[in-house]
Length: 193
Image (cartoon, rainbow, N blue to C red; front, side, top):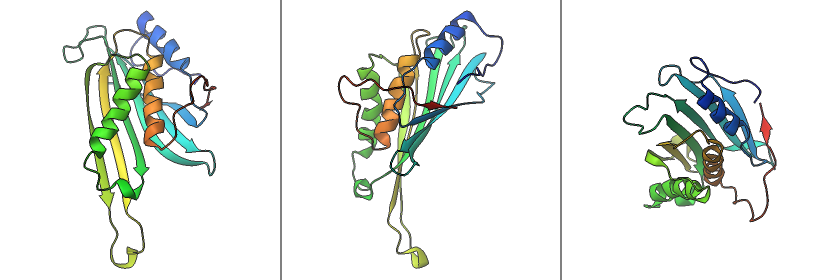
C-alpha cells in the first residue's frame, strides 16, 4: 500500500494512524487493497478492502472493508476523534443454516478478536446478518447457500490503529473458515496492492 488516500489536509495524528495501519501484520492468505475513502463522513479517512484467499484454489473465502475515520472535533456519537467502520462477508457451511445462535457466534468472532489484540472497543455497535438461499424448480439440484455479514463500528482511543486492523482481519479469517494462527507463529506480510 504505497499510496495514502486522504480527505482533507493530512494531520499529524492521522499520519501516525496511517503509519500504524501500514505496519499491520497480515496473514499470508490476506490480499489487502487501499480503495477510495468516503469523503463526507470525516475530514480524514482511509479505506481498505481485504479478501481472504484459499491457497488451495485461489478462491476468495471472505471479503470485507475496513474504514478509518478521523475528526479532531470528536463527534459526540463517536466519543473519540477516531471511528473504525467495518464490513465482512463470507459463505458458510449449509449445516449452520438453522443454528439459532449463529448471529451471536458471528458477533463473538469480532469481540474475541478485539480482546485477543488487547483492544477495548469504545462505542462498539453492529449487526450480524445471515441469509439462507434455497433453490427451486430447474435450480432444485443446488445446495443451500448460507451467507453471513458482520457490520461493526467502534471508536479507538488513539492513533494506534494497526492492532484494530489486525483484529478485524483475524475476525475476517475466522468468518472465512481459516483456523487461528498457531501460538508463537508470526504472520508474514501478505500481498498488498
